[in-house]
Image (cartoon, rainbow, N blue to C red; front, side, top):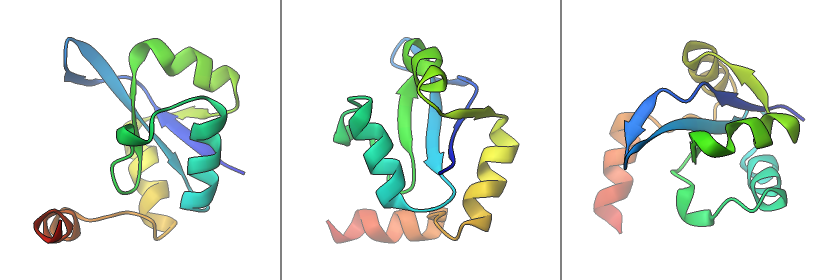
Length: 94
């Protein structure tokens, strides 16, 4: 099991945000998120958006902190990455 979280760097809604991913499966990611009461609405096709105030809690719960570059590389290597093109296509479907 490897759930990864990047440093909170992404500004929105008056806070900074991290991304939480699995480099194994979306099932693993959803199970980890459920154990830590992350709302399903924070799931964005291949990752969860996590506010900075939850970062330490998730690391203590087993998420491995990594840089944003490492997180993206691991997501791509896992074949779970949803590309910008695919993200756009999916948004037009529903």
